[in-house]
Length: 139
Image 1 (tube, rainbow, N blue to C red):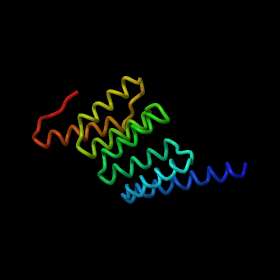
Image 2 (image 1 turned 90 degrees about the vertical axis):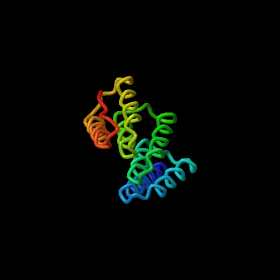
Image 3 (image 1 turned 30 degrees about the vertical axis):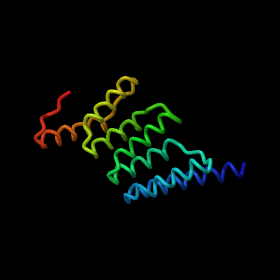
Image 4 (image 1 turned 135 degrees about the vertical axis):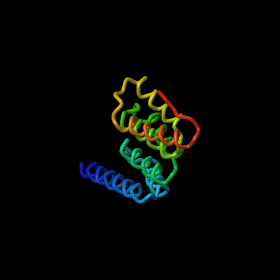
């Protein structure tokens, strides 16, 4: 029982550390902590993946963020509105509006209820596309 409690404490500390890396844009440290947790057999939750993906997004690593989310979806959990929102946000950060649209389509196909995050992010992507002179994207 004590070992399980210690393990959950370590998981919480790891999650906080990964989140802190994300806020300070230290995406490589966040990835390293996530990988070390996976390799050491620590129970890694979707929160750990989302925090690491957020660190990658804020560090300008949108491809890595999407890769982490894909890994999460394949190994642990079905896509959720939160994880899809994280992916859409990473795409927006990388100027990948077509990928963002594809993820939103996946949200709808999975019958998840989109929230304000993807809609706002897609609006931002649309404005950037329009201002880039490459044509206005429309739904």
